[in-house]
Image 1 (cartoon, rainbow, N blue to C red):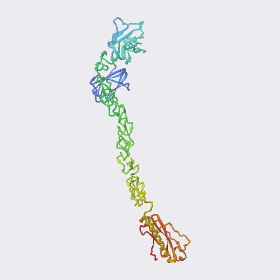
Image 2: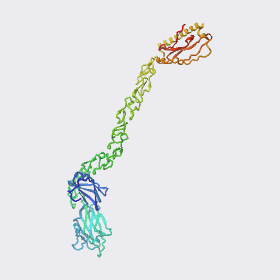
Image 3: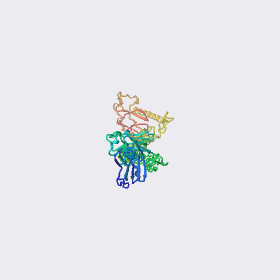
Image 4: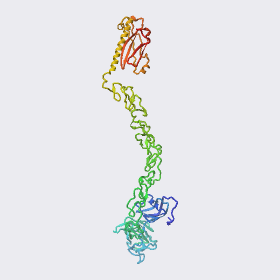
Length: 600
């Protein structure tokens, strides 16, 4: 700000600069001089603190200088420049050029012949002035040599006679003589300098000043102007100080206003000088030469400012993206929480991948998905037991959630079925028709007993309705043996008592007999039984002829499979009243044997 472009800021990190003006001015463009020209792309203009210059127009008079103009003129009291200003040298604020200077002026009358003529109000000399004679409606007029966009008018009053301009009206006109600006002075006190803000949206070709309310001894008012200035810019397609020269065919509407050079700078566009093609999503700045920051989500940023327009990735303060996410947050502007499946509830801010991996039951990288079938444990790194049905297990514990495959038993499917079970979870019993009641743990197959067939021995074969011939022979032999035994016993009775056993008089007292013992099929189990189990001996048969001797009657049990036959046995020898039932062989018959041999 010392008007010396060779002195620059060095060593200070500056990101913003606020300039406060002593009055309100229209902002047409500013000139910035930087030592590091690569930083021009970062520069943005804010007026009145928050409003940003829209669609700025950039031009580059030389390597170190950049002119930035707003598309439309705005009034400012303060101006803020933001960006990387480490190498800032100078800032110039331009409110426009004085397009009234040297233009053709006229007035309704002259104060005295050739004295105080109208052109003295546009000669740039503040010591001279124009002055009309005393008349009813004095008037000053200015005609421009071309059309101008005027942002501000300044009227300098005659020193010592301020009253002669009080109450004036200023009007401007376009090429069709339509009024563009229309200002009437209503101030109670006359001013040394009047500032009138122009429309600046419509080019004007002329202006006029009239209607004073002067109070003076003369019968009619005077109109005096020390200087009148009109600040503005050349319309599109014109350049030079008086804006009388046309831009070249290479840039017919966008040449530099001072030298007519075609603009080689486009801020946010890629095709100078036209500046009509937007930057790609991932580029920004002058001629789209800058890449969007990796902090920007989707690598997308504003084509002019480079600020992240879709939010920040890993940062929370969009669009600047300077504040890191907390360790438990991630995503666009840090708006997502790390997964509950993360081992430490912390994750990578860019993609949510969990630091330290996942809890049991969740899979990498972000621990939001449960384990796939066949996996379980931390990071789903363990395979399910191959004995789990459908290879499916609980993702956290690894237990087989659908049970076990054929041949293995719950709960963990690591143990094979017992010999008498088979199938899924060992839930099926081997067939009772298996020879050993044992079967294959997977499908229940076994070797079948005679009379049954099929893989699990559940089907009877074709001859199963009639008993096998061997079985018939055994039964016949059993019946014959029983009959023979009965005859022998009767003969013994006859020899002792002199009568047959069926002739004895049976005592009227009932015999007390418990249910005969059930003889198990398994020989070992048989021998483990108490030989006297379930047998209660009582005096069950006693008559007068046997009153001096004890007689015991016991049923002899003949069993084969599930058939039982009973024959009465009379033991008359009192010394041998105690006897045992013993299994002589693994044979379908029971034998009765006394402790001592009985003599027949």
